[in-house]
Image (cartoon, rainbow, N blue to C red; front, side, top):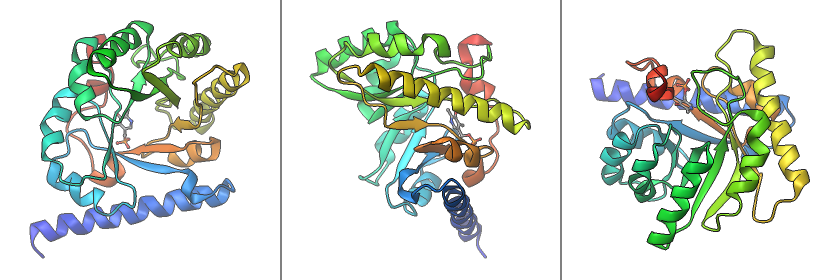
Length: 250
Ligand SMILES: *Cc1c(COP(=O)(O)O)cnc(C)c1O
């Protein structure tokens, strides 16, 4: 077998396994399989491999963490149906670069960022879908609005007419203690329910982006509509995730 076909086989095999895991989790949770969308978390993965994985998907969806990687890979992507989400910490001076490529920004976690986003969108005569990122694990190392302040933030962002809130995103606690991980996802659902109860004009709460390679089953049981998977499809990354999650907090 050539190196190339071995890599392809691995990808195809990994995608099969992930799809089986999603299906089984849906069966267990008595949910419909099409309620859960797989997002490829593609940080550090080159475009060739990303495209091979995207080609195996019915609705190709990928997420990048770093503006620089997004700008490098964006122009090279040949799959026109691909939805691209931004899932990393966004510095406001990089907004315009992200807007060039992203269909959705999953990591909006502060009012100042939303304000600048609105300004830039007005300037470009554009609109954008977002999710509000919540720090459900209360870890200092992670970005996201504190759970107690999330509803208020959603309310404030809803006043920006070019930003369409579609739901919430979180990174669960990294832990072997499944109950603690589950508690993070339940916290996100609780916030979703609080927002829905407030009936805020223009705010949709359909999307819950939660669950990754290690905890996607728990997330699906708790109601995830988007799971973000990297390692289980592309293999281990060279850098620890802290490099991507708390760059300005190190
Ligand atoms: C890297 C990353 C993922 C995927 O993590 P894996 O454990 O590799 O599946 C999901 N969400 C975010 C925000 C990420 O940065």
